[in-house]
Image (spheres, helix red, strand yellow):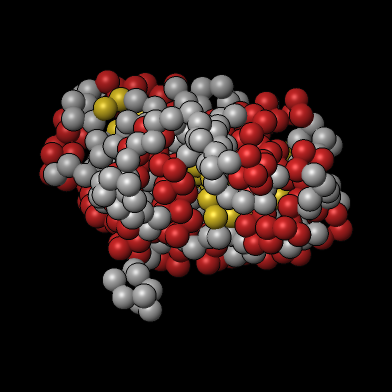
Length: 429
Ligand SMILES: *Cc1c(COP(=O)(O)O)cnc(C)c1O
């Protein structure tokens, strides 16, 4: 490729961050399955530990296979740097550890992955990081939740499990007025469908377990630094703007500028908490990303066909798919995800909880399990599984009421998927 050409998204998905292995010529990024790396000499070792030079030390804080994944996801999202970690939840934990002090607050959409509702509402409390819930369908609830202790706003681009589309630009305005970063969980959209940084987000997180890896074979997470935020503001983010004792008193934002947030997540968060991605899993996710554009096209095309079939079926009460004309999020989907509204969405069967159980018990091609973003089509009844810990009020707020079934449409033949759901629906009532 000539030096002056800016590569397109599909080219970046295959090539960004990777080059033939300099010692062996291996074309595919090797799995550098090693815990540690030999220093050139004592001075080299000292400079690595002082953050004066970049290089490999120990896989807990960085690894060459993981580094290719980091560069690739940063390129696809349009960020300045990325940090690969062991899971999507580890990514969220390190992001908030970097931003929050005990007693601080952050605002999060109610429309979130069930596990994130637990992490924010229950486990973060132990560190005195306090979530305030808001509603993506009512931007004022974000505005009204801002206090002097607010340190961040967190939303999902396409919200799990309801398949709603978030007005990222509108919420970014609230974040900017409050002087806090907007964090977007872009797991369900992937950068192929939506690039949150273009709409005013400052940090993007991923569960790479889902569409990025795409084959249901590894747990992984990524943090992307947008490079957009001024971390010195009122000294609200001491980890970034105050001298760091463990690195000879350097100030991370002063030294690393527009990728200081990623450095803090790695050189403090990953170093001290240790949720490291294994090089083997990084390799699998990298392989998945090469076909991300192709898979997402097929995921979206199949999802639309299945949603159309369901919306015309007499036993279906409603379908919530933002790709369907007439859906209340259709216009937001056109704005934020013009190439397709993703492949995770929900529907309700007439007959409620019992009918929902009937459907998930009578599919053959769909797998009944708790995951999304696989090549295989997946089905789950959130009220009896992923979201069963939530109250009735939280269930409906999260788009997971008792009649709700969530689908993650795979890349099989769409006619086979429709036939499978048709058979399952025949078993109802
Ligand atoms: C799965 C998921 C997570 C958590 O990711 P893990 O890799 O399972 O830790 C977070 N957000 C969303 C939207 C998810 O789908």
